[in-house]
Image: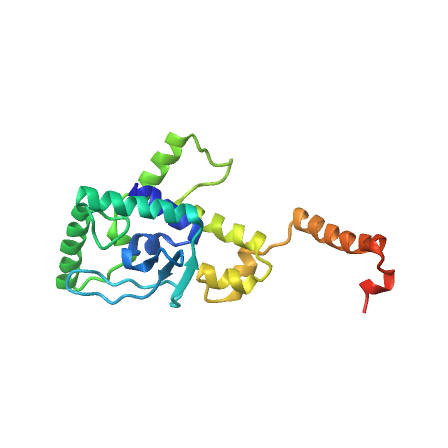
Amino acid sequence: MRWRAFYALCYTAALRLGEALSILWTDIDYGKRQVKVQHRPGTATMPPFEIKDKDSRTVDLPQQPINILEDLYIYCQATQTMSPYVVLDKEQYERVKIKWQRYCKERRPWKNQNLLNNVLTNFKRRLKKAGIEPEEGRTLSVQTLRKSCIQNWANNINNPEVVRVLAGHSDLKTTMQYYCQIDSDQRAKAAAAIDNLLNQTDAGMTPGAHFG
């Protein structure tokens, strides 16, 4: 159930690996159906969380991941495995605390990905179990879920600035370069849109109404 919640956050909110691992239950607003990605300083028992592009953001969630998170929360309470982190159980959190304290003592830098090991291995195992194979010449990773979400936004949201903010990109150039590229399908849609406007003349508009 935790992995399901983890993948849901990556695929529906475009969270990066470290972001999805670092989400706390207090970052979830069920009433507003939102997840907040925000900086968090380290404490004696909890490592810091640093966002890659520095800016905190809030992403609205579809109902399906909200349902998954609610089910997981109930499960954690019933099994007494609750931890501050959404995707870590109680035992895993205790190991994180020990690791974090060791890093502090050794003055080693902490990375968000240090929260949990073997994430990619687990992802590949579940892909294989589900019968999902990458296209030839392509590889699948947890980052693929984030990229898919951003591409879905880019395909369905007209304002690229909205996509940039939701994705947590510091620069619009990144959004435009990787997720707002023009392909043959988009060209066809553009032509169809103009064709639809021109066809409105049949509804009583004059050709000149399309210009000006």
